[in-house]
Every structure is written in structure tokens, then in C-alpha cells.
Amino acid sequence: MVALLALIGIAWIFLFVDGVIQWLRVTWLDAPAADANTGLMNQTPSYPSVCIIVAARNEANNIERALSSLLRLDYPDFEVILIDDQSNDGTGEIARGIAAMDARLSVITGTDLPAGWMGKSWALHQGVPKAKGEWLLFTDADCIHHPMSLQMAMGFALNQQKDFVSLIPSVELISRSEKLVMPVFSIVFGTLFSPARLMNHPKKAVAAGGFILVKRHVYESVGGHASIRSSLVDDVSLARLVKQSGAKMWTSMTRDLVVARQYESFRALWEGLGKHAFALMGESLVKTMIFVLLGLMMMGLPLAGLGIGVFEQDWLWVGLSAVPLFVMINLGLGSTRLLGIRRWWALGIPIGLLLYILIVIHSVVQFWRGKLVWSGRQYGR
Image 1 (cartoon, rainbow, N blue to C red):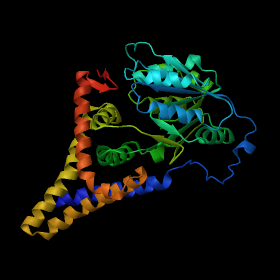
Image 2: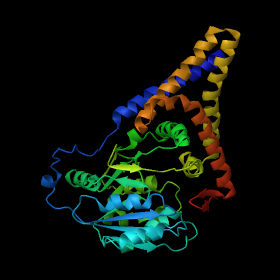
Image 3: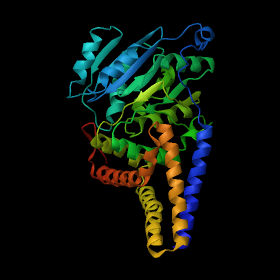
Image 4: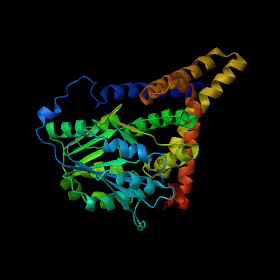
């Protein structure tokens, strides 16, 4: 048991060091200061036309803010197409009301989901034929855009001769459940995907669906969303196709150009993370079980060891148990800083990890039963 606690401590230290290394490797693209001269307009004499395509299903709470932010973009030539993916909460009506006041926005009513397609990919696929832009910007209905987001991304793409640019949005966390679980998800995602390493890797790719800017001919040459119709992680799958095609890509994190408001309730958090949890494990039952067992062991044994050590006044046990807990909390501090929430939420990392493990288990069970739910639809085998 003592040896196992020591190994768990070493494992947490490894994760902490890896997290620091990843943090140092992260690339950022942020909005310029109010008085800064970015020089993008001078460096880029003419901006190409862009069609912004948004898929929305039951986003009544977010859609007005999202569309308003898009229509305020500081960019010379763009249009916005929103696909109302059969919403039943008034999303389409709100969007059409905004479209009636701004001709740059058009709203399409999505058709029934065909077999073998994921809902978001199908919605975006329906919007592309209506697009007029030389470039396409795919974004989410829960994302708020800074007025400079498109100009900054396009300026970088043109100046650096990129065909595909993705920004990983910052997230707006309000509820307690988000602040408990999202720091853990950030750590898990960083451990499994190592996004800082993949961002601009010569062979691998990562992207975020909240902001994917791509040349239209490149998107069409890889088959578009039809080629990834069944993928639960459409953004990463599309990025991989583009990378394999030989197109030039760039991915960056941003603090303020794009902000996502994802989960407004515990149920939305449970369903949203559940939709991705099994996919992050490569839809492998073996990998998922290993993750669950390691997660429970790396969290549970130090807590149990600390309790036993204090009760038995065995200070070796106390010390060996305290080390992984201390490192765990410090890893959580880095995650809370990244997410922009108060540092003391790092103390909830053990609870958040337990909740995320339950989400993963539930995701696997529901996927294999064909009852994985997201936005009112069921997915699975």
C-alpha cells in the first residue's frame, strides 16, 4: 500500500509537470488593446468574403447574444447563415426576428436527420450550399465573438498563408456544477489529447468547433461534413481530414476573441460532457475502464490513506497521501486559472473528478444502449 501511494504521488507529479510544459507551449491569439494598432488592415490590402455558418438546436437562451456578436464583427464582407436544427424552444423565431432587421443574416429550417449523421454535422452540411463566401467560418450558437475575432483570424491566415485556422474559445462558467467539473475536464482533455502539442504538430491535428475558419475549396476538397457525418467529435475529425490533405493549418487558444457559454444547468453539463466522454476514449471500452479505474485509484487511495494515517497517527501514510493531494490541488489551480474562475474551486478537484468519472460511466452505458442524449436526440450504436 505504501509503495502504491508513492507511485500515485509520482503519477500526479508527472501530470503536473506535463501540464506546466503544455502551458508553456500554448499559442494565443487575443484581441488587441483598445489603443493598439494591429496593422492587419495595412498588411492585408483586401479581405476575402466569408460565410459564417451556425448550427442551432434549442439555443433560445444564447442565440440572440451569439448572433448579435456576429453581426457586430469588424469585417468588410461577410454573411451569416443560421440553420435552425428543428428547435422547439423558439430559437428559430428569435433568429428570424433578428434576420428581419439585418439582411446579412439568413435563417434556414433544417430537415430531418438522416440515418448515420450526427445532428450538428448535418445542420452545418445544409448551410454550405447556400454560402457565397470564399472562406467558411463554422461556429456554435453558444459562442460570443469579439468584434475583432474574424479580422484577427483572417489576418493571421492570410499573412501566414494558412488554409485553416481554429481558435479554442475561453469558456464562461457560472453554475457550481460547471466550476466543479470543468477544471477536471480541462485536465483530462489536456492529458488525453495534449492539445498544446497537437495545435501545430506537423502530422496531428486538433480544432475547436466554436471557431473553424477554412478556405471553401479546401473544405470541399476533403468532402466537408459528409466525410465525418458519424463522428461525435466533428471538429477534431474535420481538422484531421484537412491535415491529411496537406493543407496548412494553425490552431490557437484565445482569452477573449471567442467565449463559449456551454452548460446552463447540471443536466446540460451531464449530457454535453457525456456526449464527448466516450469519444475522447476513442470509443474503446478497454480504454474507458482503464481511465475509470485509474481515476478512482488516484483520487480515492490518497484520501483513504490520509484518513487512515491521521486516525492511526502514522505520519508516513499522512505524508505519502498528502503529496498526491497537494499536487492534485495545484494542478487544479492551474486549471482554474485557465478557465478564469476563483482559485478556491481547485479544492473541489476530488469531487469534480468523481462526478466526471460518473459521467464517463453513464456515457458508455448509454452509448451502447443507443440512448446517449444530446439536445433532445439519441445517439449510440
